[in-house]
Every structure is written in structure tokens, then in C-alpha cells.
Amino acid sequence: MASLLALFYAFLLLATMNAVAGDLTEFKVGDTGGWREPDANSTSMYSQWAAKNRFQVGDSLNFEYKEDSVLVVEKWGYHHCNTSNPISAFNNGKTVIKLDKPGPIYFISGAPDHCKNGQRLVVDVLTVHPTPPSIAVPPQSYNPTDSFAPSPLPSSGVSVAVAAIPFLMALTATLVTLVSGSP
Ligand SMILES: *[C@@H]1O[C@H](CO)[C@@H](O)[C@H](O)[C@H]1NC(C)=O
Ligand SMILES: *[C@@H]1O[C@H](CO)[C@@H](O)[C@H](O)[C@H]1NC(C)=O
Image (cartoon, rainbow, N blue to C red):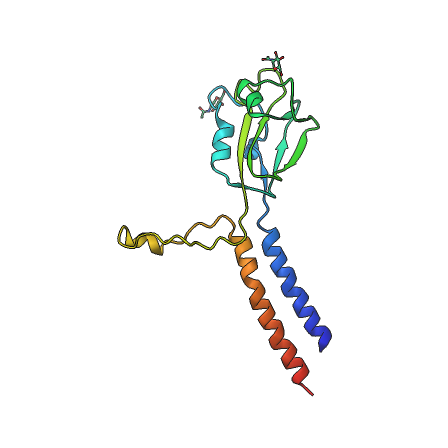
């Protein structure tokens, strides 16, 4: 019976950890097109791609490319397409970069003229806030429907997981009582 309880608890714990891990995303840069020099009619494809995604600390970017390269550069290098002083450089065709700190991170192609033709990317990495209790109460009279709209919390997965912990503890306590209470 005790081992059954342990199994049950392990299962719940695993489910909780999965909820947290499920929050981490690997983005394929450029989606199906990958990392390449844009066509002349779509030079802003990477800023459009970045604008439709939300990047958080812990997520990663997957660059897939052929006869090209990925350079991580400073803001200056991004704006001037200057490839001479990269922070890091990759050219093996598949580069996964972990977004390990908040703030902007800049990428350009190292191939001649590719950056100038739009093969550059900046992503703004957001911090994950595990517990965002909202203290500020918006004025109720302004727009009553607003207060019923679900707020888009940046880290719902983590919040749910954290919220589940007291529940798990209560559940375990109940089970322990049940088990020890049985003859
Ligand atoms: C952009 O140009 C390419 C050829 O250079 C063409 O195949 C493609 O259909 C064009 N896309 C749009 C949206 O006009
Ligand atoms: C790139 O920047 C370096 C200094 O970091 C400079 O010497 C070089 O001329 C620049 N290249 C171009 C093409 O602007």
C-alpha cells in the first residue's frame, strides 16, 4: 500500500514537472523557410517572424541553413551588418541557441550581403515570472467588460504548476491518513 502511495505521488510530481518543462519552446527560425537570404520582396521576413512569437528565458532558437552562417552580434553589428566582430559564430548547418537571459539578442548572417538583404534577426527575450500576483486594481467604472477578460499571464504553465503544489501536499496528507488509518 505504501509503495502504491509512493507511485501515485511520483506520478503527480512528474505531471507537475512536465507542466513546467512544457513551457519551454524551441522555435524554428523562419519556420519552414529556415535561415536564408530573403527574396527581394520579403526583406523584413525575420522581423515579421519575430513579431508573431513570444520568447522567454529558457526557450531556444533553432537555425537551419545551407551554405550560410549564424553570427551572434552586438546591437551595433546588427544595425550595420558588420560581421567582423561577432560574439559567437556557427556554420555547421544547424544551430540551436538557448535564450538564457532576458533582453534583446541579435543575429546576422555571415554570408556576404545576406544581412543587408534582410537576413538578420533580433528577438526580445522576456523574463519568466513564476508568481505574478496583480496588486494594482484597475478602476471598475472605466470599462466593466475589461475586468472579466482573462489576463494574458506570461507564464501560465509555471503559475499552474506552482499553484498545484499545495494541492499535491493536501492530497498526499489525505492519502497518508487513509493508508495509516487502514488496518
Ligand atoms: C516574391 O518573389 C519571388 C521570386 O523572387 C516569388 O516566387 C514570390 O511569389 C514573391 N512573393 C510575393 C509575396 O510576391
Ligand atoms: C566592421 O567593424 C570593424 C570594427 O569592429 C571595422 O574595422 C570594419 O571596417 C567594419 N566593417 C564594415 C564593412 O563596416
